[in-house]
Length: 303
Image (cartoon, rainbow, N blue to C red; front, side, top):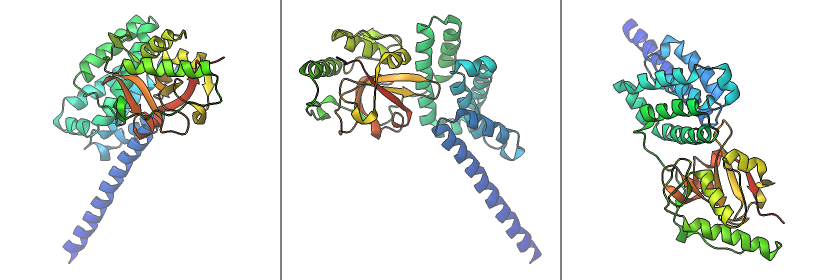
């Protein structure tokens, strides 16, 4: 009877412990998904200091991903100059273990999203002429992310599936014509491959695509996505319509831009240069990746 009693207590404690461990990991995932990277780092460090969690690579993975994300913020990185080296070391350790690879594969969607964010970062570093930083991050991409699949996070649409609706009748005919011209030219680029710093039909990155399309309708845009946002006329989400731009923030600032191809009161569709599939049309609100990263809307279609 005593043996059964103690075994009962043992398995009750074990069950509670396992549940608690899963709960802690779920919190890491939730905070990371919400882009609370500093909080993820803090909680991951706490778990790594607790021997109870030594059996799993999950805290190490989330710590490394949080460090990669936080390092994209110039102000944060200046105060934590070893963060990239630490993130790379953790990532390498995870990938060198069979147990670590099981954790890696179980979180492949988050890792693929991280890869996309890092690609956007390298583009900005290259345009800003930060050669050493660009080469450092590019080396990380080659060493750690080369074999990570480029997963398109739902919402990809073929152009023929987009329903054409009339523009806002309150606008001038010149504005409506500009919107139609932008969307028509953008759709002609569907299928053009993604290319770092690309800005012509041989290959586009995200801001190179928007620059190319709007330049054809006599709109000169800055080259970087963040500058395109800063220089645009801001538009409320409910008033955004075809030809306007939609901007995304990965937690470290504006990192992506697309062109809206839908009108007000319609499902939000954008055409953009995706790092995984090149120029495609995406239904934003059906994409788990893009919908949670929307930062704002802007337009260059002004009187």
